[in-house]
Image 1 (cartoon, rainbow, N blue to C red):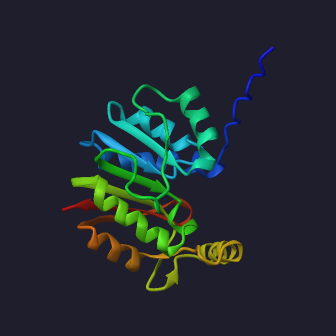
Image 2 (spheres, rainbow, N blue to C red):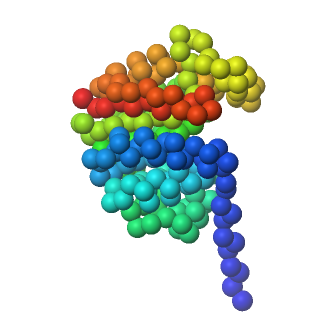
Length: 204
């Protein structure tokens, strides 16, 4: 009898469950005219499933690095609607990215687990795939003027750097400079629950 491969277990993030509706309230406005949105670092897929369902007929394109794909693909296959594509392997540092041009890009809680070189690669990749008039939305914690927005974010940064010295909460000013070099103009910087931000840029 032929062996049957086990179905990958679906990972679960409590943070995704807590923040998905607050983020969606903003994305509903920001992506209202978009047709294809690429999500970088889809992780557990909870955001992808939730956002795609609410933003149909927009097509949501989840992606992540190869180790995350089995669990991510399992959730998309089990829970996503027709307007959520099967996830693709995408490492920001491996270019060109394996996607067609899009008019929206979303990522949550990724920049602080990337190295600064990977953050730079992220914006270099965007420069090739985000169409004129397209919008970029980044969710997560940031520093401003080299200062943390809360003691808890300072503690979080310490734990990140202890685990990986190349990671850490990014300075908004440095990230915005990368965005400007990619012809992205700041549209909004919104305070979100749990000391996070949702920052929106638009391609010139």
